[in-house]
Length: 282
Image: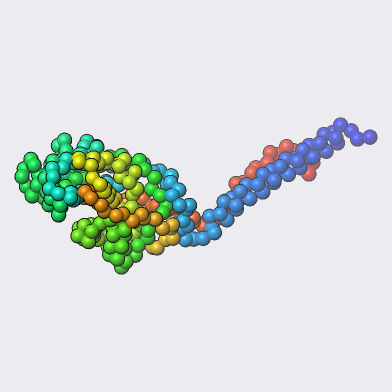
């Protein structure tokens, strides 16, 4: 017959073995979870595209000045009535206007000619466009779809896309000569044209009399050191009919990456589990 001390030692030894087995299983589970995450991240060392129109994790950008992130730079407005007429242009968020010409107060009132020439009713000065810059908090989804454009392809890309979006060659020239020096500073550029809903959220635009065609173009871009693969944005061709209003502008998204990188794991670190020393047998 076994005495009490022998039974106690055996029970203690059994308990220790159970604890060690549980700890070992937990270690295996931890390693499996780490390896699984690493494998999912090492499918490719290249940036991978996400699903089209999947929103970025932080879609809100707050701006406070002319040179801040997501700043709408150099929006200009052209007016092309079918006949000479007086036109009022009202911007829906005047509190966000930081620069304007002519000076924006409660709106612009101009006499507009069919060829686009304007006369400011307040000053009598002849103009060819209305200009403003704005800042504010822009809440919108920066979709994954867009374009990655090499430096040497920038001009042909802009000529092609701006024609699709409805700009004349003269308007496209104004757009290109303003943005080209900035785009050419980068080997590649991620470019995306904002939707009409996004533009309207940033700065609502009202024109009286109501135009037959309204074209608003807002180009966002950020520089890239290397080419990446993304889903190409689909642009809808625009046809100009009747009284036409055209606006174009853009902003550089400095430091904002429009895609997610899948990077390889540099190593796996398994936590060390210390077992309690209970004493007793082996």
